Length: 405
Image (cartoon, rainbow, N blue to C red; front, side):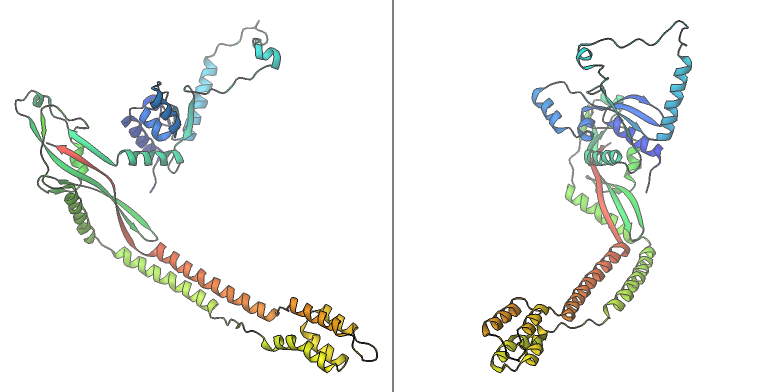
């Protein structure tokens, strides 16, 4: 869904005129407007200022905006106006010299020439591009949705009714505008404006066309009488929802079947890819008890055995390289070992710095990668289901009480 610049301009102008904003300048490409207090509160985000105005009773100064709907056309119009103004400007007289120097001021006397400051305050006019998708247009959408979520309108009577002896009778109606979304990997939206009489329970589809022919106002006209409702608002809302549900059940849902086929195809592709990845053999993580036992018991065996260099070199294979060097250097040329204090220090170093097996680390990393791949697989399947699964969503975007003759 998108909106052309003309549609955006029509919507924004309708919103501004509804809130009694003062339109100062208007063209097919832009509009310059001075906001009303209600529009200023909704669009400018100045809660502290409006809190000050409400507390002190000071006169409110609302902001002014130039909303540009077509930037290219607006720029061309500005250039054309500047060229026209240059042509109409009188040529400089021959005796005119250099332009007059700026007058000396107190600040200029001490600080030099003071540049002109930008215009601030209530007289400033801000310029913004308002196109479909812009932040300002989204803000206007939200403000219109919040301000018009519920209305209470009365049909205005003719002039002859004001002079009639008997008052005219109003019939209360509840009107709800539903937005229906048909969503899968594609999306379609529909608006259904349905009304129900709170006196008879009659349901009217395309309720908006019935209201377009009537003059509605939030003020109750003179010499008019409002009838008491026989149907509660809760029952009326439930009746409208039931009516809309029955209407939706009568629609053609072949698009949903096609969406399910596309979903099955996408899930099959995802399953095939991750099945091949997860099928790879992952090495098991086992604790090497043999090396651990040899490391723990080597020093004890050596202390009791004391068989010479060959035994010490074989035992030191499970320890760090510097321990190996220490043990090799501890062997005397005659084959006699050094004292037990050096041996005990070497064994303490072996216990303080255990060896990490590269194969075991590689196996642990493989297990972690496999778990991460499983999580990625589940996430991908969830995304595919969310995107392709067909669903119908119904939302009540606005409602109102309409008192009609």
